[in-house]
Image (cartoon, rainbow, N blue to C red; front, side):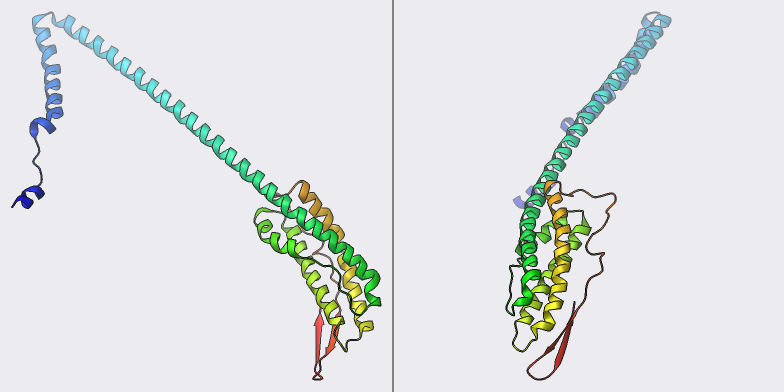
Length: 256
């Protein structure tokens, strides 16, 4: 029984919850009756003239206050919008600086790696034909670690495509050198094919080093209006075939 009484919806107290409506009704009645009584007791013309003057002055004061309030609100909104714009601009600037720093760090490591590859390619062109077992230093760790982040923040897609193609040639050159070192392979026939690829890569790495060093000083982290494209990918790639004879007598071919 007590629980049902507690769950029962509370009744509305008229004197507590409805007094604003009663007060409004009372004010309306007083505002209608007072001018009539005043006009009956005093002069009617003076009463209605004073009432019209007071009403006009009240309306004018209300409109002025309303206009002033709207002006203050507009000024407040303008200040808030300007503060929000400054915060967004500061956030974009901080993000831009972070991306520039990230790109400079990544490209600095790739530039050092390309310099090592360039020296190894020069040795390959000069010396690999004289040796059967020739394995120069051809690192690719900096590119493997930085290609993903750079692909997100760099807008120079031509350069990224060139670097990806070049490091694919690095892997191909490593495979050819390992193939040459296998027993039963005629290094005199394979060395010219390796030499052709190494010379092509030696020319490409010089172009890539120039572009990467420019990215170190001024990375392209914002969208470019006119991307000229890559300088290496568009070139004609040298091709060569390597014929391998396995121990079972079957022949396989590989082309680059």
